[in-house]
Image (cartoon, rainbow, N blue to C red):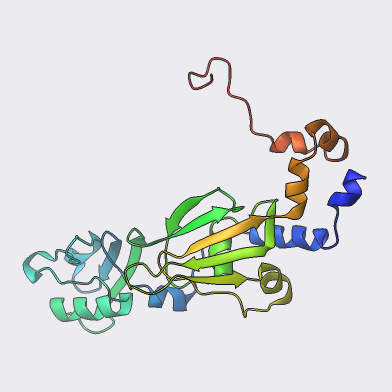
Length: 234
């Protein structure tokens, strides 16, 4: 009876959705990279074709500037990578297209993950206006218990004196139907929440010995006990 109850319609589709999201990707779309605006304390990498002495890594200081030695301290905070490259060209007298800039470490902005996301609740770096789907793929997808119909983006509007916004994300429609209407493009400091499936809530109410009968893998998903000689164990 428990097995029938837990195998509700759509279960197979949700499993396919979860597996799709677990296909992690570090790829960032060119449009996302171009739209990113650097800030303190991001680290950028410069490559100057005719001026190799400038090649290297630069951390953006608290005043939004980088140190170019005799060529001063240009303020690059709030600029896109293309704008930074043009500025470095002008500062160093390098021909157009002679400078390449990329973000080596994203440190200045973040988004916050809540709920049934692989890796649990945490803050991750914001790397540009990724969609919700792209962000979830980058962080490893949702858990076995994640509910694709219970996904929300909360936009707190930090520092701009606007009321917070809440967006519902139809993850099933995005992944399985290629319907991008709710595939929100993220902004810095957005919060992403993934709720728990009805199946998972029901499972928590069923004794473990009953769950082991129809799902032997449930033992594997239980948190491991600390070794007896572990100082952290009670």
